[in-house]
Image 1 (spheres, rainbow, N blue to C red):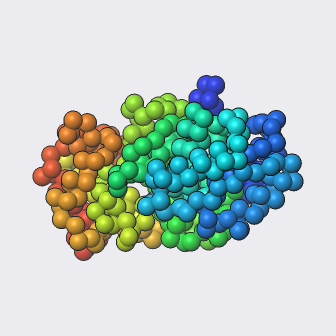
Image 2 (cartoon, rainbow, N blue to C red; image 1 turned 60 degrees about the horizontal axis):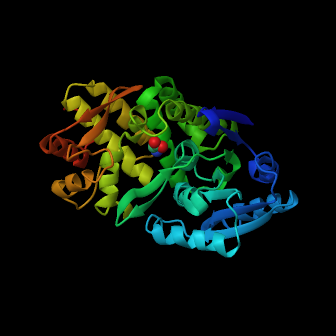
Length: 370
Ligand code: GLY
C-alpha cells in the first residue's frame, strides 16, 4: 500500500493506492468520521460486484448506508441526475456531516462529487475510483461537475475529497479498452511534465496491459503524485493546472461533434494530443521527432491517433470555442515543446487549427511534416 499526500493546507488529503482496499473502506472511513452513517453513490454497472464488497465492508465497521444508484453515461451526467442523488439523500435525512462515497469511474465521481459539493452546501467526500482514468486523473484534484446542453463539465465546483481510495484490484474486471483510455491520460502526464514517466510507461506497456500488480501500482502512484503536485501548486486552475488539458480542446471537439459514439474519452484525447503536437510542430515550437515518438507510443498502447469522423473542420472548430479555456473568443491550446514540457498558446487562428485537423484525418501514420 502507498499513500500520496495532496498538499492543500487545511484541505490536504491522502490518496491511498493498493490492493484489497475496498475491503478496508470501513476502517478508512472510520479514520475520517466518528459518525456511523454514510452515503454511497455507485455506478449501476458495478453495484452487484464492487458495490457489494463496499456495502459489506461498511456494514462490518457498523456503518448505516444511504445508497443512490447512478447510471453512469455522458448523457446522464446532468443536472437531473444530480437532483435525483440529492433527493435520495434528503429522503433518507442525510445530514451535512455525513460522508458521501463515490464508487465508479470518472462520470460517477464527477456527478456524485458535485452532489457532495452542493447538498446542504457541502458534505465530506470520499472518492473510490474503479477505472484507471479516474484513478490517475479525475478522482484527484477536486474538480466535480455535470454537463449542460451537450457542453462538458459546464456546471461544477472545486470540492476536494477527504480521501481517495484506489483499489488496483478493481482494474482486473475493467474492459481493456477502458484500461487503454487510462493509459492515454498517464502518457499525457509524461508529455506535460515528466519525460521519465513517459519512457517508463512506454517500456512497461506489455506488463501494464497484462495487469502486472507491481507495475500497475507504480503507474497509479506515480501519476497520482504527478497530478497531486500540479494541483498543490495551482488548485483552481489559474495557470499551470490548465496544462493538464493537453489534447482536451481537440478531444472535446471530437466528442461534441458526434465522435463520442465512436471514441471513448481517452481515445479522443489521444487523437487530440496528436493534433496539438502537430500544431506545435507546424509552429516550429517542437521537433517533428516528438510527434513521431508520441504517435508511435500511443499506437503501441492501442490508442488511435487518426480521426475518422464525418464532422467538417468548421463544425469541429465551432465546438472548440466552447472550451472553458476560451476567453473572449480567443482560442487557447496546450501544446508540447518536447516530451516533458508543454506550453499554453492563446489567440490561435482558426486557419492554423484547420491544418492540424487535416493532419489527423490523414490515413498514413508515418508523416510528421508540419
Ligand atoms: N483533469 C484535469 C484537471 O483535473 O485539472
